[in-house]
Image (cartoon, rainbow, N blue to C red):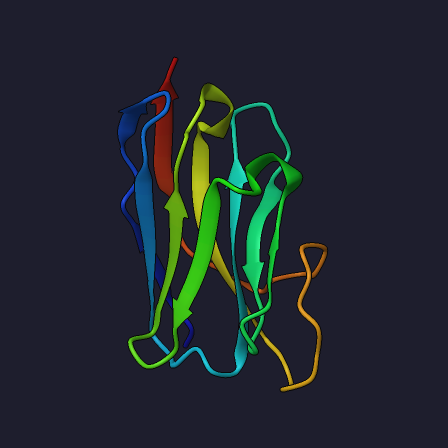
Length: 124
């Protein structure tokens, strides 16, 4: 059974940095992985996606500030967040979708596996 457990959420001042981690119950080789977020009253949005081949995709709002990475052997997905602002305040979720080796991976995909979330709060 696929399980995803996030950690690293915290309360920080605007301009600060955080690193989120997601530990999976499975090796990540065969999965498209990503981070979504949802703020109160807002729709859930894809923040960053990383395909099996390492190709990354970011929401426009976080480009240049956030970096997604994966360690297939350690079963870990990370999100390095810098220059945080109040609009980044949200619950952040780790997601996974099994894919074939040449299958593309995009923000609009449907992800069947979700973690429980970790809260990021940025004070302005």
